[in-house]
Image 1 (cartoon, rainbow over the protein chains, first blue to last red):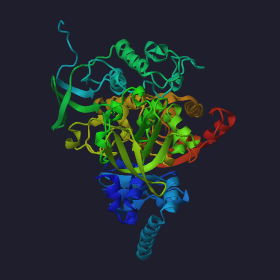
Image 2 (image 1 turned 180 degrees about the horizontal axis):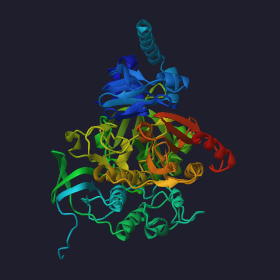
Image 3 (image 1 turned 90 degrees about the horizontal axis):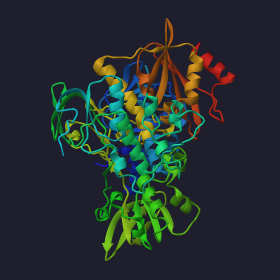
Image 4 (image 1 turned 45 degrees about the vertical axis):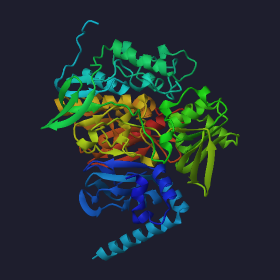
Length: 136
Length: 490
């Protein structure tokens, strides 16, 4: 399946037309990580925004898994948008296939495609609510 | 012809290298230097790989500057000569510049092919030519490569197959168009309207080649030409004339951001139906010729069935930082396919592994990695007396760092006896390896494409990044730099 077709199945991109999906798929690279390979590193600036196309990723702090991310989920957005280094490591828990959008291009994409921005915001809001509920 | 004894008969080897282009030869040379028992096989009859045929328009996009302010036998000269293979022996270094007629500072295809052949010949690199790899399987801890000459068993295989098998995008009707590899002479396009599908290397190369002949040229693909990324691209050196004409409003040359819905044949002409990706609307273009310049793939044969996973629509193997398949241990790639290891890709910058200048260093690092992994042979790390001067010298003149920006770094470890040179490794390896405190020098790129010399400190598993000030001549050995790095390593 092409990257554009895969993106079309993900909630994050559900409002975009096939032509828009094609443009996103062709404008960014795919990357695949081996099991255990680190994708984002805590403290290291200049990271990208990643959308999981296949596989799972583990969000880790000091080697301890705090959260598991699956197909259709994303990571790296906070660091990409704020320019601050990530506060956790993200490690491939299985063979992990991602679409990679460099931070500077994420901003452009969000502004160009407001439907995508809205979807991302909603997912981010749900995550935040989940985080707050976890608080003791 | 009398039977000549061919090297590397079928059998058991530590490593089997497949390919006799620059990637295969560089790997074989480096493995031999390190004493790794290996066989090198090629289906070709002579060295050269893709340069026996490509680029079709006969000139490379990577520079070689025959005269430089440093000696041709120096390590630093490799920075001025992106096309020669690497060697330790002075007589094997920098073989390409002597073969150039100096019409350009970019060698012609024939000059490049001659340079590779000269390297294979003078280094007496043994290759079993005319031996075609046919299939692959596992047998216990061994990989088995079946070939036209019999079976080769090995602990690791290095595939240096190039990325030269024509690949066509899945566009209805594109199957009727010749691929870039079937492009005829430029004269063939005299006074014709031509649509080129693709806006990367081969698309721009073919457009540049037919620019003096065609009546009109339109290039189309979904991805916009990224002018900021092109600042760091070798493509910029030679093939951007068509884009330049379009950007300045010149007539008859068009560079479009479109997805192509279909291509229809109508009599002697074609109709191309395309939708804008960076603009709204649909175009129907009538042209005389369509050329599929949608790129190439690595001829992986049955490796996907063995479990090798790919990126870019199945065209390129997905690789770890040491160029091993992310899914099949023991299967490595060298040469152009080593681009399947993207590296950190921080701030959008990637490795230069698609050309000899970058992948020759990948091959040397890979050979060292294989020697350590298979033979347990780690060359003794040389002591470093002045760590500050050493790191700054590397940042100022190490060709590995300047070519493989943000991908390869030079590492110095700190021990009880002082500092030691740990050679060049992938930056991700440095980040993710638990080990003694160490420092890495790396040339990085910032958001605006500017060059940023960087020193990383790894202490107790924590990485700290120290970006040094840019310098207009890229000279980082002055007092201010010494003070900065001295504070980092103290």
